[in-house]
Image 1 (cartoon, rainbow, N blue to C red):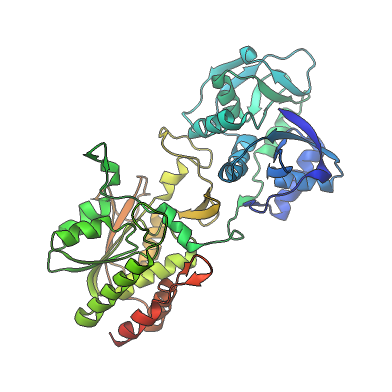
Image 2 (image 1 turned 120 degrees about the vertical axis):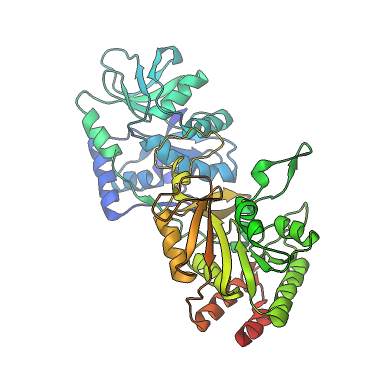
Length: 473
């Protein structure tokens, strides 16, 4: 539970992904000055490392605080350490119209921190089915409680109601901060403000870590083909639009499942994935990748540019806008004029179903935390990897800028037009390649893509193979 800790003994984490503007910092300062510390931070017991509450701690130091209330947790792994930082910003500041209505029973005159027995927590309305409850439950069961709710002097919970709901459902007692009479509107005002945004640009990007996002395709579960491992892009658009005479390139092919299947059926398809892993191991198969690049270069030398280029679920796995641009330019570069390009990604609205305090009924989903460019960062095996989401406007803008003006957008293989906001779990694009860029722009993009970084401070050197061939085309 909560303890008071010497502020000078705390150690900030290097990974904090949330940054405050000067205005947000000033609002936080005013909130603490007028309300006091009504939300503890989270620290790791072994080294007093701050896992969540970095900006609050910084502000408390500026205001002269010597001790801070904190939840102290044991045995937190590195992945969950970052997850606490992200999830904490929701649990501590969640105020929304879909929140549950919860009341707690309080002794008369109670103010400040108070532990409410579970039997004295009343869930009047459940609110929306919120995936945050699932995330919060997992973390509480693993490490114990790490947050508190805030209520007014009558016992009505007004901040962090989803956390309070989770604690009630778990049968646990709830720590609340009871506001003095007349302070509830002030608290709601401050906690409804935006205290900074998630900003991931300062985090180290190791592009090869993006292989964590590769999807397993055409796989079986208990001997039965799994429908969730099938590619809508391939099944609905690519395969119906190619023949065994069509020359196809799968760029960013992941584990090359579809390319391998089509090759076995006699289709002329090459595949390149710069971080293709050896079967059953998290080791980049550099030998096979070089062979794939050689096959690609051989096709370009002997037959020219490809009739069709496929890029399935790659644009949602880039780690920067520059990488996104380079991928799209590369698709256009390697496809002949008038050829077809097929690409896919994940809609922004689908991500937002479990983000930005919106309800979701899909308990498979996890809360995501988006920056200004619709990237989110996840922490696995001690490394950051990134996911990128697109609105309909993004899809239209990107295709027109780097590929062409003649294209269709699909959901589940069904055309949806360019006006309706995409809302499914994936979108697909079929476009005519109009080769809108200059030759030097294509060369620059190819060089970037074929020299991507590898582990141990190395880089691919495949540009020396493809650039001389492409320059002659």
